[in-house]
Image 1 (cartoon, rainbow, N blue to C red):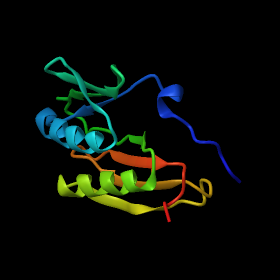
Image 2 (spheres, rainbow, N blue to C red):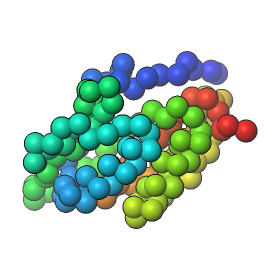
Image 3 (cartoon, rainbow, N blue to C red):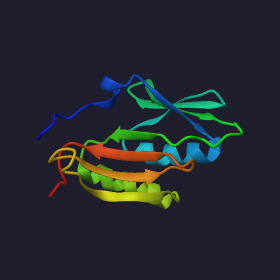
Image 4 (spheres, rainbow, N blue to C red):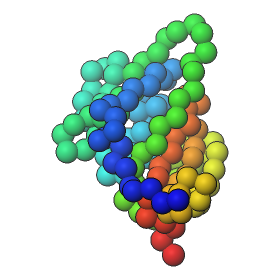
Length: 135
């Protein structure tokens, strides 16, 4: 079964997560989102907004709760498989735990190519393209 490519910002206006160490998470997201062509657009000291074309679609904020932070999953759109691979490499360079190396995920659809890592707060972060593995 084949699915059309989905542009995440068309589906989700924005997404925010909490971070125990905002400066560590900011360094992580500055690097790995930069690989995907996004950048830090807003900085309110306790919350940072990332995106492209002037619109912050993804936010990270300082979190000081007593209870454990709950894992979330977010998939960031990549234009092609090479960019997914570069996202994965950048994440590992930043010390991220690898969940799944870049590969095709035919159980989603025949051109779904993604890589999954854990960010500094334990969230499951993915880069995905819908163009296949580039071979």
